[in-house]
Image 1: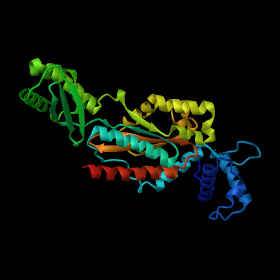
Image 2: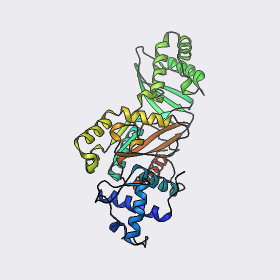
Image 3: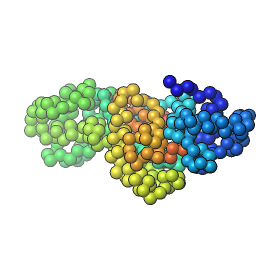
Image 4: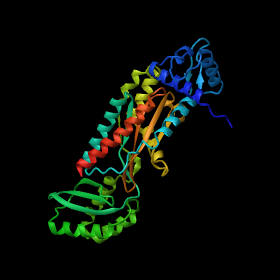
Length: 346
């Protein structure tokens, strides 16, 4: 088992990482010796930096140059930050935003705010409704051939869907359909609405079976049962050009392509959300991220929850020398903003 770093080595490593994050240049012992809380000679710092190099926490890119952090060094630094802030950081959770169009606007705004506040790129997924149950469905007529289906889950999250109908529907028919749907589906887990259940409801609806099928399709679309259609919003991809290590033609085009196509980002988010234990902050550094175009990046993600099994993911993508502390604080501030937003809407 590898021995733990003593406090002096940790201080020197933190000083190297912070200086490198600020400058992007290899860090020498003379620069580190200016940190007031070290109180050791340059010779001692050189010895400690040599040990940190041997242990794999920092790298020496050229014979005469200073040192830069390795992925292992970043990992230790991030773990220390998360440990220190464990009690301080509240995961993004228990928010309830009632209208789907308002939720989409909020999440797009969240991505833009995160990208602007951090100068990195941001990814936000639309929440998925796994494990929640239907509370009720309300069909209302917009005109003769158009309905609005209001779907409410057991955590009082409301989603709307417009339905076009081939037949004209009067108030009596609507009442019967509302009774049929709510009697059959009240308290049913979303994922249990299967083909057999749909066939039975269509049979009970008689010659209105087409409307029932349209309503159930709308329920599935509204609740987003199929996570193959996971929707994500991105912002700030042009921020990659701020950082020389990401701004060369090949790196930048690969990163921007990943953000535009979104499929690989969606796969990572789906994998995170599939893990019930993953409810807080996660940090990927360099090769820890299974996306080839992001091997020179760090990614910080946080899970947010609306309750009742409704959850999504927010991610920040930047260089490995990203300001991790600022990123974590931005996620914390975002939680407060979202909480206040929810209170104002409910």
